[in-house]
Amino acid sequence: MIHFKDNPRKHSPFLNLVFRSVIFGPFLGFSIASLGDYDVGVTEYQKKNFSRAFVEFEQASWENDPRAQTALALMYKYGEGTKINLSEAYQWNLKAANLGHPSAQYNAGIMLLEGVGVEKNEKEGREFIALAAEQGFARAKERIAFETEKMLETEKSDWSRRWDLRVPNHVRFSMPQDHPQSKKTFKIQLGAMSSRRKSEVLWNDIFRNNKATLYGLRASFEKVEQANKAIWRLRAGDFNTEEKAKEICARLLKEDNLISGCLVISD
Image (tube, rainbow, N blue to C red; front, top):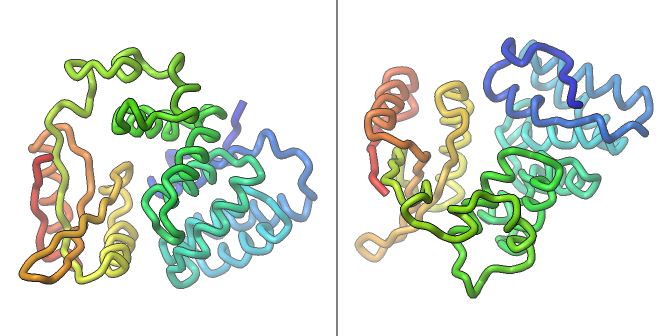
């Protein structure tokens, strides 16, 4: 059974993402000092003392506490208590993933799939996500279903076959009439930058300022050629209805001066 130190409803959605995904039941071999450092880090983070939280998580991370490593990776990713460093974020996720931490396995897998902070490697990314799913990590299960359906039958490999008895029938047998991805979905476009890196930084800034509004959404970075010049479109989604996408756009434009435009895009 998973136990959480505090009532997650008292946390921001981002804190829920960080600390509700931190499963520490299987890791019973840590020193008291390591556990104490992690708990202090959580407390300081809740107080928004990000610099102090970063120090505590970092100390516990070097003592191989995967909970702290996962939290430290997210602080590097979103630039809280330190500068954004996507490479460091991946490395700390990788360390925790190799210690068997499911949310770190999922995070490392996503970074590998998308080539964020590390060279893109879809095969390794899927393998990490499969490991997280095997431990019951819900978001990893959802991603496996999505990735399995995306792949052509000729490209399906062992990582997806072992899930054939666990994913829903409409995913296993590729029934378009039932598959959620066959339904019309929507994204919001938040900007277009001259490089992927700039788009990633823009997303980090927007997400940091609007965690409650953007919680649960996934960013995508689409490269397009316009007038012999490459641009990277920053989009987030998915939304089941156009109305919901428009609602989020209106909220972001009202609450965040960083956002100068927000377009609703139909997939």
